[in-house]
Length: 468
Image 1: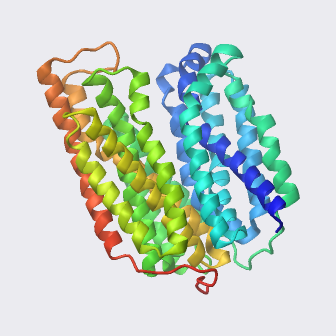
Image 2: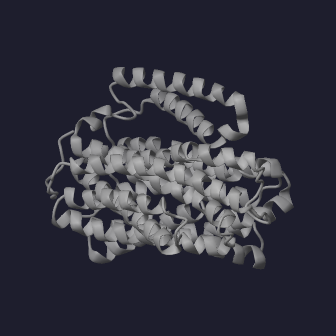
Image 3: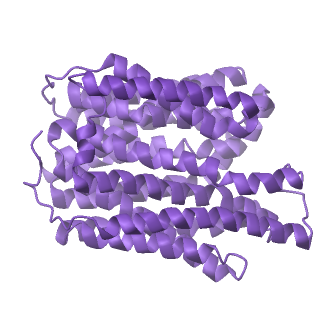
């Protein structure tokens, strides 16, 4: 592939991933205007839940389908679904429609994210892959940073519907690039495990619904756990019997791959758990504004960008183990610093930066190593598993870390993070509660560090791929 063609291909992929990433953040600032227009405040949170749920659950399915039927048609299908969902969201006439259409949009976004990373692993050489992985992390971070202010600008000027409709003209670029630059890979002889796919979707969907909505559902949430356990149990039985499993569990037998999967689960637990609840602390205890709280969290995102770019270069020049250990140390030291959150802002910012750095090192190190070690026909499912486990870790953290915080929210009847003043005793109690949550994250970081200490010292090369 010529330099010009590979550059055009990468640009198209980055635009696609930017669209998928920014639509998970840009909507937040527009939701008050959307609710005022469409009503339906009681299902406000589902505009976010539907997008996250479908994009997360469908990830492994998209990865496996692309392994079987080729990247190009599945990427184009995901892009069309995402753009169709965007247009439908922009034309929604009530909140129920918006929630359904956000689910469709998230379904397509899952394909964009997974297949973009898979294509990078398949098309680019090892050294090119290191640079491309750094670029994708930078684009993801940029989308996180510019999403809220861009959403506010669009709402204030041309209206909230263009939050979604603007995706259509921008999305034409990755479509054109895909049609012109993507090769047509031969189809695999494997077949899609339809039964296993349905069981997986049912089990993971009900599990994520429980993790995200258990505090609102009360006792009825136990039904979701029962359904999830039944579906996932049947899924495991099915996967042992089928010739073409949706998730080949043989992947977990290889130590380097297993370390990457578990490491991404733990890193997702730490990073997304902290980014979920620290804004609440910053607005309730030091009483910072929402804007200032968001600015204080920037080291998390910037640390991820720096970590992703640095580690992607280290892992191709040395081996997997050095950046893995740096990741574990950063996550552990960062969470320990955050347990001293009430002392001063410098410790807080340092902790955020180190946690972000550790996340970036984990994501890039094991994305590149997984894509280098796996055979071409397994790239989709391997790449999607990393992302899926990372997001599941975040969903578990959102539920687990909320327990000590939620008890205080109920005790002090806190209904919002604005227009409320806590007494000194209440601030001390809330600080202690969130510190307990951070200690739980620190335990996860200690486990990640221990895991990375025993990471195999593998030197990557273009010939590292294992046979299928």
